[in-house]
Length: 155
Figure 1 (cartoon, helix red, strand yellow):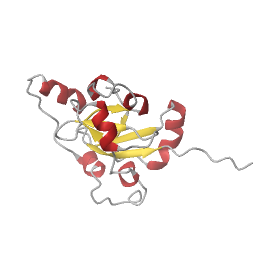
Figure 2: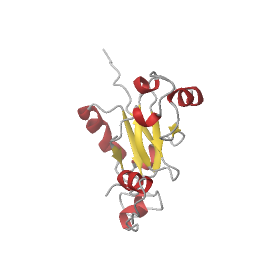
Figure 3: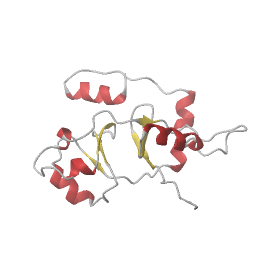
Figure 4: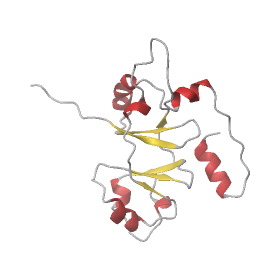
């Protein structure tokens, strides 16, 4: 079960037990790596960590004012433990300022683990039409955000 689903179930009063971290989570957490691949940059190494966040109950207008985000910058919806619950794009932030963020967010954003090689991502993101990649731990806790850089024309 994803951390997102677990967080939502906990909000509904269910008790959820989570997986204990293993070797892959060691690397995903950015802890020291050894071996021939140790120096290869991973998503957790290159993700922007200071990203705008909101809570489900926050009002769109408050988030828009507080975040003062650029038009292309999404706001990531998180719970009290920083588990990613959704993503609000600029269209959602342009909406009715009185409604909760929960009503305008994408509740199923694509997330990636921090141990994925950074070089593997650009082609995948372009192919899928994804402009931003949310990087989370295996428990769904927000690490940061990757921005797909637009391709430069050299003609």
